[in-house]
Image (cartoon, rainbow, N blue to C red; front, side, top):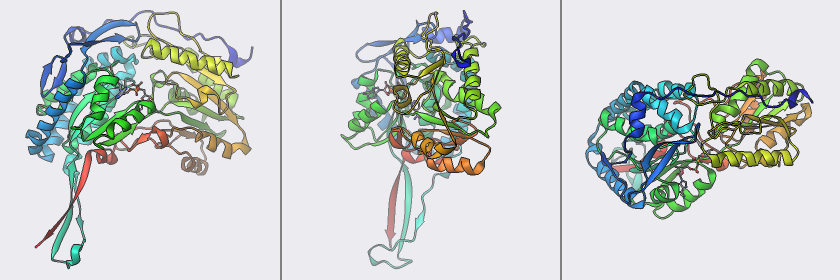
Amino acid sequence: MSATQKPASTSTTPSHPAPAVATQAFLARPHRLFIGGQWVDALAGKSIDVFDPATGGKIASVAAGEAADIDAAVAAARAAFTGPWAKFTAAERGKLLWKLAELIERDAPLLVELEVLDNGQPLAVAQHVVNRIAPDFFRYYAGWPTKIEGATVPAAPQGRRPGEVLSFTLREPIGVVGAITPWNAPLPMLMVKLAPVLATGCTLVLKPAEHTPLTALRVAQLCAEAGVPDGVVNVVTGYGESAGAALAAHPGVDKIAFTGSTDVGRMIVKAAAGNLKKVSLELGGKSPVIVFPDAVLEQVIPGAARACFFLQGQNCMAGTRLYVHEQVHDEVVAGVAAIARGMRIGHGLDPASQFGPLISAEQRERVRGFVAAGTREGGELVCGGNAPARSGWFFEPTIFTRMHAGMTPVKSEIFGPVLCVQSFGDDDLERVASEANDTIYGLSGSVWTRDIGRALQMVRRIDSGQVSVNMHAALDPAMPFGGNKQSGWGREFGKEGLEPYLKTKGVSVAW
Ligand code: NAD
């Protein structure tokens, strides 16, 4: 048996602390739709059960909104857009965003537990998201409303001379926004839509993922508490094929902001064609991690493990294709495998857990299928490959070596903890660059080297919306993020993240 062929011995934690009383009370209460500032029942009276993926047990039940509920939410969003919300000054919108950051911090214990129970992520991840990432994001966007400006333009339309006409642009909110979000990071996914909506003066109908609706419902309450007028933020929980499809096709919606799979992204584009609403898409990824022999391996090894296994690989930026120079291949693989084997699998509420479950039994079967394909197609399984014997939808962190372009797990977005390793030699730089790009996706990627020239050469060659050097998936509220190719349309984060929510009006005044 080679050094890379040890059986998986990832440890698992047996039990977990109970959630706080406040969290239990939140879970137990009825979860209705938030429309026009009111909690209302879904018109058809249907509901969706919500499960803790770490136990497989039901934790809550939420209303299942459908097309008629979307109609009501869009009407409320339209009334707010043309009504009281239009009277808010930019500074007032900024204050609301700042207040929301404060309320998220105040509510952190509840939001952290909801995020863990709903999605399965480890406690430390949820704490970082709720205490740091979300407040920072809302505060960043709190600074923008007062800086959204048009320009004066030296235009001379219809033969006018300077002094006879004044031309300028107005930046206006695009209108009613439909946002559809995935389950892999529920709070961040809604935050990246809600913050620019409020900053630009748009209104929102949010359809969170059916697996993870809970933090969206709490954030709706926080918006009301912050003073966001009724109807500006509406939340319709429901299934994608009913509530989501109705929102995407709705003639009263001016723009859809979608995050999710590339396949559903295509459906959104078709649905949006009816009224040609604007569409921004944050879709799938299959990101490369490229390690040169001069890289600092003490950074590469934990960095590559985190790049793939963060959120159990259910992460659009996941670095799931690891290209390692042959000189350091065995050392890097052994190091990443040691981390993978040593990760404590367990319930996110147990602070010792480092690795949570997949979102559903269905997702776990999908991942299992990709692992079977990798083995069948000749990959060498270094570690993982199995579901541990415990309740919940866990799957071990898994590493394959001897992979090559064209193998099923190398080509597909698995959205699970499966790392595909390939090696390259000194003469293979062109091959690595072209293989890194040999994917329909182009979301993220990283290059690990001390040679800045080589790093920048690779940065230029990788066709992705984000490339990081000596780190992976370097996100920041100020840094635009989004996909090339079939990873999406448009950018979120930063100043560019406002653009999809704004329209420009050219004005010329003759006198
Ligand atoms: P998904 O596409 O299945 O679902 C996303 C959302 O779309 C959910 O709210 C779902 O209910 C809704 N939906 C499903 N069918 C619909 C339809 N016909 N019409 C309208 N809405 C519909 O994706 P998922 O499984 O929830 O999330 C995983 C995917 O999301 C991965 O592909 C991942 O890469 C991607 N993702 C991308 C980013 C990014 O920023 N690029 C971030 C996170 C996740």
